[in-house]
View 1 (spheres, helix red, strand yellow):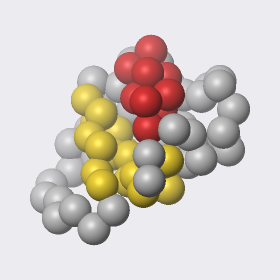
View 2 (cartoon, helix red, strand yellow; view 1 turned 90 degrees about the vertical axis):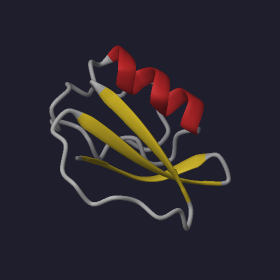
View 3 (spheres, rainbow, N blue to C red; view 1 turned 135 degrees about the vertical axis):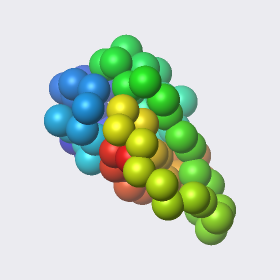
View 4 (cartoon, one colour; view 1 turned 120 degrees about the horizontal axis):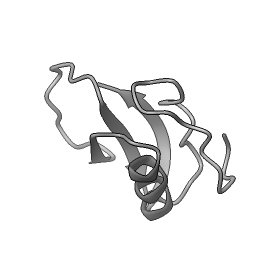
Length: 72
């Protein structure tokens, strides 16, 4: 997905990578609507822990826009 309003995601990683290009607020809204148990927003350059947590969606954000998304 590249900026559309329909994430088409199911929780659990089916479409964890489909949030790039969205504004962070919209990505968070869609992720929660599609059942992600937790959404972690990571600002550019922010240090993160590397533990894997099923059901958590990570959103790497720069200037308010999601650059990358993944489960864990």
